[in-house]
Image 1 (cartoon, rainbow, N blue to C red):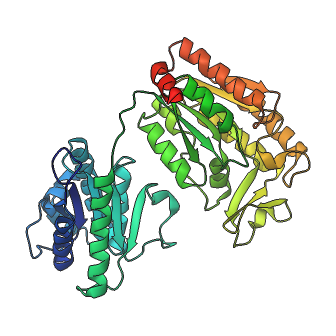
Image 2: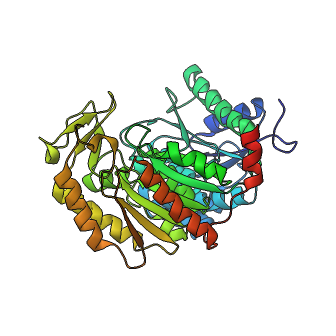
Amino acid sequence: MKSTHAGRAPVILLIGTVDTKSDEMAFLRESVEHCGGTALVMDVGVLGRGGFTPDILNTEVAAAAGVTLQQVMETGDENTSMKLMATGASLIATQWFVEGRFDGLLALGGTMGTDLALDVANALPLGCPKVVLSTIAYSPLIPPDRIPPDLIMRLWAGGLYGLNRLCKAALSQAAGAVVGACQAHAVEVDPRPVVGMTSLGSSALSYMKKLKPALEARGYELAVFHTTGMGGRAFEDLARRGYFAAVMDFSLQELVNDLAGSCVSAGSERLLGAGRAGVPQIVAPGATDMVDFAAWTRCPERFAGRAVHDHNRLIASVCVDHDMRRSVARAIGDRLGEATGPTCLLLPTGGVEQWDRPGEALHDPEGLQAFVDEMTHVVSPDTVFKPVDAHINDEAFAQAALQVFDAWVAAGRVPPGVVDMAEERRAA
């Protein structure tokens, strides 16, 4: 099988406890090689030696965490021991990936191994293929904010202790998944700067339909992230790593979800990645009037009796009360106040999502006014504040965003677009 990695087979970092799962890890290594890859085995076990010698010893993993393996064993607590090994494994994996020593991650584990694997997977950048073979794949035991947004999980069925045909099928398919992902991974050479944008689908929020052609005409590539939890996590990760030339973060509904305790969350650091990294950010409070919940469960008790929009059989949204809207405004102001780069808040005073228009299910003009009033008092002096007399889905809002963006480009705050390529793409 041919490789797309400069003439070499994809290299897979294979992580597991070689002391307790020697047979499974050896079979995984063989499966990776059978699929056309090369495996680097990292042993994160702490009980002793396994049936073969790994490429990265458990003593090296412990040392990366600043302790000896003996010290790890002497903690007397398996949770503490695994946290130390997770720290060491994450540091080694991060460094080795930067150095180009492997292309993808495959980790094997029960609850302990999965706990460690999630730390390692989160330490690696978006786009690095990551597969976790776990006895608790997709389990509610795993909090959403610990799942990397691009993670592939596979249930390790029937393989908790020893090899059998079911176990071998799961192991070989996981190996094929990560090797295939590495072989299929291709980075298109594109000199255009990338603008990151958030939106809640294309019905609740639709400004990207106007902004995408406008930004492309200016020589930028637009990446739009769906703010239903994982989308926001991916957006924050890339923003924090400086992937974007600028961001248009116009859908902050995940922030509201997190404040309200919804499961549809991007984590507690939503709206902080770009600002802390100094990435120019234009922000708007899109969809901040509602909290998402699983449509197959009950509406959160706090919002019982409030208007609800059933989007589909998976997700529904409830209009939040006025106190919550004021709290959201304060949270936005606080988080923008931490920004170290150019920051502008656009405040569409005519509405923040499609379902809050007159006649729609979530129309609440008093709630919108409460939010607008609070927002005007809590914006940091370092944040450029621009009220827009329009709904967020109106043409006037899109034009206001472009006006700020163009001014930042002219001032050198945002790198210029590659217009020649943009013209070539339009011609094609």
